[in-house]
Structures are given as C-alpha cells and as structure tokens.
Image (cartoon, rainbow, N blue to C red):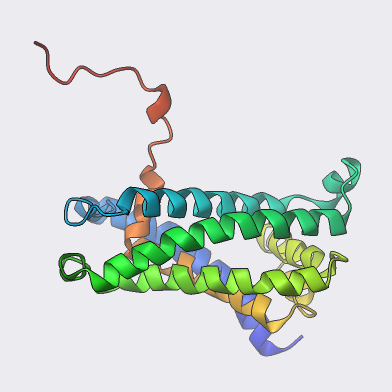
Length: 226
C-alpha cells in the first residue's frame, strides 16, 4: 500500500463526493438560473437528435451498469448462480455495446461543439472541458475491454467491486487494499471518473438532477384552448 494509492483511492473519493453533493446544493440555492443544459439545437440541428440520443442512452446505461455492477455484493451473484467470470463477460459485452453507442454520439457532439462556429461561440470553457473529460473517460473505458477479455477469471472485477463497496461503507483502508493489484489503465479510468464528479457542480451536468423522469406519467397539460 503506497501513499499515492491512499490519496487517490482512499481520500479522493470522499473529496469528490463531498464537492459533488455540497457543490450541487450550493449552485441550486445560489444560481438557479444556470441550472440547465443550455441547449444549442436551435443554432445547428444537423444530426443533433441522433447524436444526443446515442450519447444519452449510452451513457445512462453505462452509468446504471457501473452502479449496480460495482455495488452488488458477490453473495447475491453467487446465490443467483452467476460466477465472477460470467459477470465479467456480461459486463464486457454490455459495456462494449453501450460504450460504442455512447462513443458514436459523443464523437458527433464533440465535433459539433468544436467545429461549428455558432456553437463554439456560445460555448463556455467548462462546456468544452466537461465534454472532453467525458470523451477521454469513455475512451479509457473502451480501452479496458481488451484487457478484461484477456483475464476473464473475474479477479480484477472482484477487486473493483470490493473497492466501491468499501468506499460506500466508509472503510477507506480496505478500499485502498482492494486496488493494489488493479492495472494502471483501470486506475486512471477510476480517477478520471471521480474527477468528473468533482467538477460536476460547476458544469452543465447539473441538469441531470432535474431529469424529467416523471414526464411519461405526467397528466396532459392544456397549453391553449380554442
């Protein structure tokens, strides 16, 4: 156990989580006017719907897969008859499909943001930074797929699950111990993921908190009567 691992995987998760939660709350309380995604569809519509749908569907499924995959206790998987190697293979296949879907959409969004003059002119520095951070994070995740395919014994996956569960249960030393055998690329992916949570409150990503999840079940609203 070295000091860098302790800092990055035992301390940094709590720093990122604290800034993520308190920063989001502070921004909502102090600057609600900026609590939006700043849609630029009106400025350039070409392929916007396709790119946005691919990106949003892909990243939501990736997030849910990471969330439940990392925090599900191995005992539950064992009770369901799912071995560690089978779960890792499922994670690799699903992650590849959703990751490539997200990559296609995000590539179009990055190109649009950086090359369309009107979009670029209305973009803040943080708009570009957060988009590129997500892009690099997605590429790192896809690069871990071949490494996972070469080691389907589930060892790395169990270590990652142990790290996540120990962080959530406030046992940082056990969390740090769990990442000792994890490869550099996986660690880089983890650190960048936590960094995205760190900058979350200062970016357009805050609109996730206001996702219209109740919209499909909402009663019809009469906007104008004849």
